[in-house]
Image 1 (cartoon, each protein chain N blue to C red):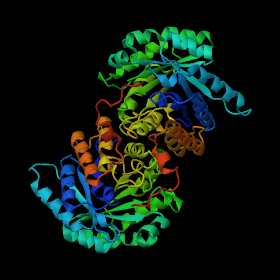
Image 2: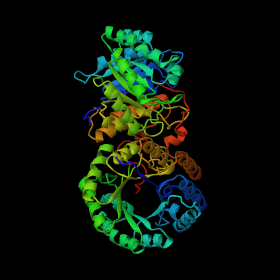
Image 3: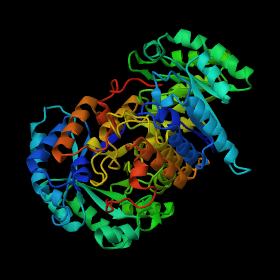
Image 4: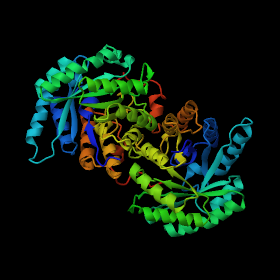
Length: 312
Length: 312
């Protein structure tokens, strides 16, 4: 069992991307609140098509906000690793030009999802790892490959474990510095999480492999815990559990950062996150998007006494 | 790791007890739907004060419904173990007279909760295990002791592990046939679940120890998975995740039976539960109580494609 886990806060990207756009000023507030939680990694934005994802149209402006926040942090504060998602080489160049050095590039393990998401099959998206990683490395940065539909695809069904593991090995050969396995539609379960992680870690033993879970079917935190017991030390989560389908509030979303931080911290696994600050950020996130996320912990009002009368 | 887990369906008791009373006819519908899911244990009702818990006032009538359902089941159907919660010897006598042979008796590990819940300290509630168990045994039945606030108390804070473990050992000496550890306020986390289970199983190695989690802070299913990895083969869950505070819909509740059944089944742990039948029962449960429970799986519409467009 690891004694520490780095949570990557993905609310500003995965949480906000499906929302109606909020202003860059609002994002500044949110990023500042998140920076105060003690979280060590924050996915700040995505350099994607503003037509496809209007909520990410201000990616370059967000890069400036990030630099302002870093400049304003107290001397001696632990550094925050800020990252940006990029869909291709052009996006990578924009992100690097804007000042990001940690890039995330998504490859769907399943052709069905890959075609729907980026209009090319897995093999073509995978081949492009080489140019994205090379661009990152030339600029002194790093490239993480996020493997979408690592467990299941909404179109193709189950993704064979061997397919995901081979994709991971090939991504590393092409230059990926780290990997993250994405449970894109929230169908993973703990036993399958452990099976896939064992296979992937055997395929790429020297590479950091993180995991990204959605709570669509309630199992997100159980999968996260299973991943940690399998040795994972990088987990994605979203403030307030933002990121779900806006037409089914409370029903899905990413796993909530504050819930994951409590779960791990209370289990003896350090995340560096201050729970009160994380709850404050989650409350702000809900306020900024204008609707509740899917965090039960935020609804319960933290770790203290629940609102209802005690029951047996 | 166990290869099979018995889920005890507690919706008809823990789920309904805080709701406005529904008719016995409505309960018949629900119990019939639950009996069709393949679940092997159902907590049907509680023989408690009708003034304190009006939703359980028809406990004797529910006992008759249970007997009708058993009589009407197809020959060769796997048997269902029906149970009733009792608060004291008088309740136990009523339950036994009504035909229940599986009794559950609650002892709060923390004095604060014990005083609030049954107006007597832990030691007095524990002493009464002897008479409740004796009554059950005389009638050819069995008595499970449910340890409330096994991890935390809303009044006293953390319950020391040794206190809960000693209480379990004493309950068994007094006649308890099996035990269940209750995370009454939904504050347990996986590491603490494993710690307590290890201590309790060491204290009472020959006794079946189950666990009961609420999802108040999002960690319910993670705790359930942790419990299974620690060897637990009996877990409580509630259809549709009913049982939460009605003033914070979706924010708490018991862990949802259908979510737990999917999580375990998909991880290679047999529960006997048919997922479609469990979802049908959960939908009916929500309809009967007139508001949504806290099941993300039910909201997502089962294990198939989610409603939103696929995301990375």
